[in-house]
Length: 256
Ligand code: SAM
Image 1 (cartoon, rainbow, N blue to C red):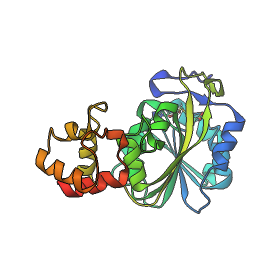
Image 2 (image 1 turned 60 degrees about the vertical axis):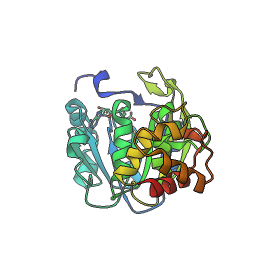
Image 3 (image 1 turned 120 degrees about the horizontal axis):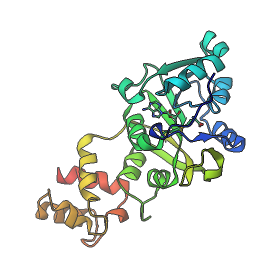
Image 4 (image 1 turned 90 degrees about the vertical axis):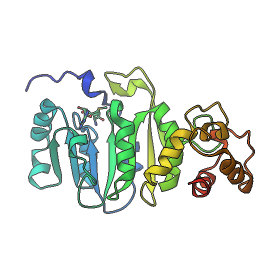
């Protein structure tokens, strides 16, 4: 088989550090769910996953699909692994598969946020353990009051708990990316919140340095906002990142 050259357009940075690979496996939730791996690449993480669980993989690169099919011929024959060759976003209508699953993957960074939001909304997805750009992981895992606390943190906290498992330097990959990465885990307790709530969050954080009142007053009536803020004991000068997830939900229920 020809030598595989990493393709930038598919966000290919292959994870080669065995310690990080083992940390991902150790952090996997202990349950009977199937594993979905998006972008198995050269199969370095896949080989650990198929040892413990049955895996449904989605890989867009046809060269890699061929390589994986020959590398994992035994696991494919025993149905421990199934590889879908194609763009995962095309395959994702409602639920990605019909049974409960955990998403475990070193994601392609150019579509990582989109994939995580889809997994949060997918009722069949129970847990998300993924490697992404560090900056993105921090946004999903941020707590109220932190500078990067925003819509992604609130959407995540509304459905479960999130924490960073390990930070990963560029040297762990081949070729090394220009940025730091991190693996983080979201344990889902419920499904993603309704779209209108997420719409309110987008407005709330449109200009993060302005007050929450100022941002929201673009689409909500000021008097209704003032009343709701006062009932929730939120000062009019409060900034969007200083309000808790619980208060955002209460605020939403009062102003819609
Ligand atoms: N899991 C491997 C590892 O850890 O070394 C590879 C990770 S690499 C960061 C991202 C992988 O996602 C690549 O194999 C790439 O071809 C694949 N990929 C990129 N876009 C995709 C898409 N839209 N659907 C499915 N796979 C995709």
